[in-house]
Image 1 (cartoon, rainbow, N blue to C red):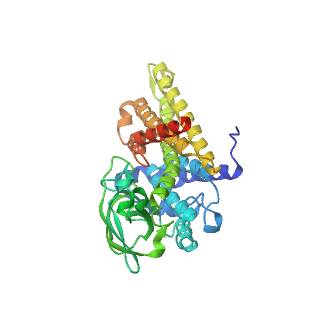
Image 2 (cartoon, rainbow, N blue to C red):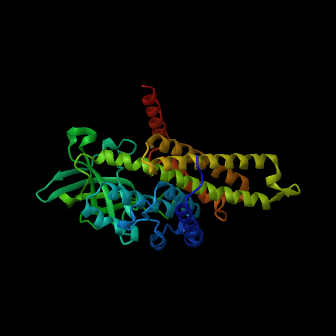
Amino acid sequence: MNFELTEEQKLVQRTAREAADRVLAPRAAARDVSCEFPAAELAELARLDLLAIAVDAAHGGGGLGAVAYSLAMQELARGDASVAVAVSVTNMVAELIANHGTAAQIERWVPGLASGAHVCGAFVLSEPEAGSDPAALRTSATKTPAGWRLSGTKQWITNGGRAGVLVVWAVTDPSAGNRGITAFLVPGDAKGMSVARLEEKLGLHGSATAQLVLDGVEVGEDAVLGAPGRGFALAMTALDGGRIGIASQAIGIARGALQAAVTYAGERRTFGEPIIKHQAVGAMLADAATWLDAATLMTLRAAHAKEAGQPFSQLAAMAKLFATEHAWKICDIALQVHGGYGYVRDFPVERALRDVRVTRIYEGTSEIQRIVIARNLLRAVS
């Protein structure tokens, strides 16, 4: 296996690292307190070509693949996970439209996502009664002479109320099960769409997470992404790729927390020596570093398979499961190493522990990942 990055991948990694240190990290703690949406930061990341990394350069994207995307997400999440999740969803939406949209849809939406003209994108799938089971969607799309009318309530929508374009999933044929779900491209200023509330969350305070209400939102026939009835398949494809992004986000958060813990353990002295020299502390940090390296390799393997056009669903599920479960453990260790100081907001590990927790839930819970992996194992022996 060749573990060497290409020059383009190194450039994206370096660009994202510098942006994390220069643009994101300085105000990450303040955003956590104020819950301010990072509009200015997203504009700067758009200028650096980080909002549509895997999209062809002809449509304004970075023209790179899933490995570069993963590397960038790791660096951005180390700087501020709230901004990283907004970037992750925008990349998902841009790639979904670029890969499955018509020429007109691509021209209308993708360059604006890449440039920041649309601010960000939103992936509008989950509902109050349909999270891990997207086939249970209740949002409906009924045919009209001019196109479609969308009605329903959506839940846990990242970038909700801020996105310039939303991919909205709705039921177009209730009798067809999964094959009766369709994806629609909806402008952020569509009449009849409103934010019912912004969620007050444990972490990721700088990320807008909204409940959206669609009250008879009218869209044209040209708003259908892919084809009627193809929405469920599009969602599953996008979520497979999205799991690479969330695994990368978890890695970035954990890496920042581990770096902080190692620095602190080298400076904090008890019993006459730095605490990192105490066997108990050193062992915890050694475990954390080992888990982090394994998670990184698993995630890059999944990204490489996606980029190469190989099956990657199981690899992505395994990477997300391992990376997010162990990132939580790493952040917990980082806080423990800090002792009482880790429990207060003066040190960043407190925020890291809160921010990383949701990575085990969104883009498919850890339990769903285990189901995906088990099903793939069964297929392999059938």
